[in-house]
Image 1 (cartoon, rainbow, N blue to C red):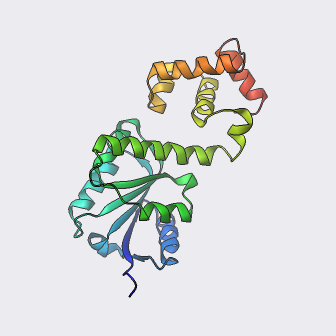
Image 2: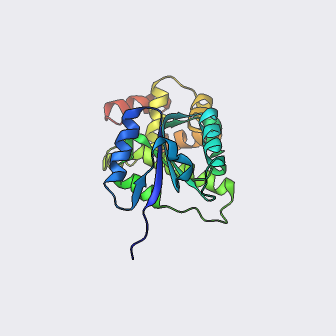
Image 3: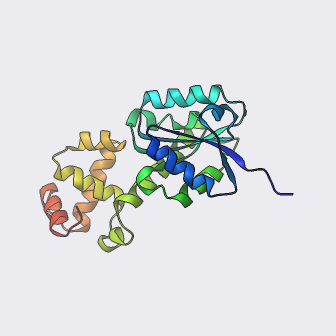
Length: 212
């Protein structure tokens, strides 16, 4: 006897994203898509938003409080997550966080199937989810093989781009949710690796070689 399909509620800020995700899920026998009035009965929530702010997390917490399934979990798909919210991701029943630009059908299905270890501390989960989001964001921004050709990590490319836009180390650290010391260390490593004189030379090199 086959298992019953999991009930998924799609919660999106715009109908196109919501209907597109629902179509993905209806094509899989593993999932049954709940209607708007059936959200409390869902086993898993698929939340699609352009930007994660305080209100996003509060709305998610409210939806989970009204859920009829005690261990309902959630998958979050977003274009951007504000720095203040990154460290709080572990406390809202999230099992996965994806960057929307790289959230393919297969990745969404894989994320919906993921289970959160019961004993995983909230701070450990928040770190894991943050890393997952950054990794999926990097996949969308930099095509396969791009970083290998230039021997760069995605965060190094992002730092070079922000330097080119005129941001200082404090501003870059704030935007990327790293410490200023980490940003300075990354820039210093880049200068040594490519035999560059200073930050301006690094930006010029990145522009000339097509890195940014």
